[in-house]
Figure (cartoon, rainbow, N blue to C red):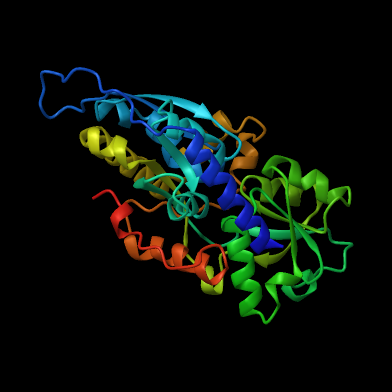
Length: 325
């Protein structure tokens, strides 16, 4: 089933690529300061999840302004929803974009991309499959034959779950995935609409505290421990024309990631400002991802290789040319 859906995704993506002319945004006239970015106005599409903490911290702390950038935030429910706008040039960067979907777009020829900066990587209890306590699902083996909700299918969640199940001697093809937005998963699980949900923070904590859901599989474990989750993607054509802008964005994100790593209080304060359903008290309970401060080609390659072993890609994708350095 997942192989069929992946093939459909590739066909749809190919059609999208043929229908949309990918063009980079026009740069404004060069400023008098030769070190300043040529394009200063940047529209950034971002998913409002914990992975996006470094971006919102960078906005709040003025790191983008310090780098000479004026960023406009466009909130989207799924990072893939921003791909058409990225191709049209109305969005220049997608932040907290899941690596799997965007590497898939690269591999299938939908878009030629650069990874401008990292957002997050897997940490303990931040990507979790949960079930209701009164269900018969207690261990990964109990997921065989069950339906699991994911945000996008196929995606990083399906890759992680498949890899962990395989390591636990469970056939990944025995699981059925259904697509439900992250915020809607806990209620759907509680009502019996699905057997289990693959969640991220802050929705893991919401599912546990509001509905009593319990973890049955940790997606950041074994073969997927520490893998990158979200990054900042741009079109290669835009980066080539606006390299100083892309590097300025990268520097600002590095500062945002560094702050997220060292200051838990700053993280707890920023989350309720862009995830309105989360209170400061709830933010204090969240499990946090790791926030890498530099590009790590080796770690991103792990994701691309997992996509091959998970059946999303037919051949190995070399990610080194995609990394902005």
